[in-house]
Length: 197
Image 1 (cartoon, rainbow, N blue to C red):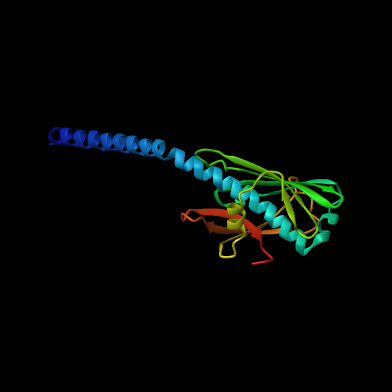
Image 2 (image 1 turned 135 degrees about the horizontal axis):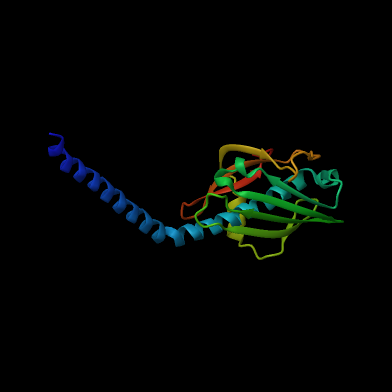
């Protein structure tokens, strides 16, 4: 009786492994086919997220122009714990006080779980009234999308901190994750000033 069932069991096992093999081929083909679209989306997401960080600091500056005087050094770097950010995006901001303005550099990198790691870096001058001058030509449509008020909160908030977690930031800089959509309906993650929603 055992001998009679063995060929059927073997056939079932072979069929199971053939199905797994075929499914993995379909999955690999799908990943290869969708990679260009995924890469383009990830690049755009990096840019939008990096720009939203600068816009957040511009808004903070307009609300609280003395914010930069709270920092002892002329050059400072702040980060957000990437483990708290959706998709583990690495967000870093560095700034340098330059008399009548602050030179700010926003850099963003894809998280460890990205299929196609991307990064973006933007520099800008922020004046005490929040006016911002970007070094690069930024499309007005992109900035308009970031500044839209119909963005949706996704429930995550966090504080900017020094890379050295033991060092206390002299002023709380709170950020909130929000979702925006482009004209084609694609959703992008941004961070906004959490005190001004």
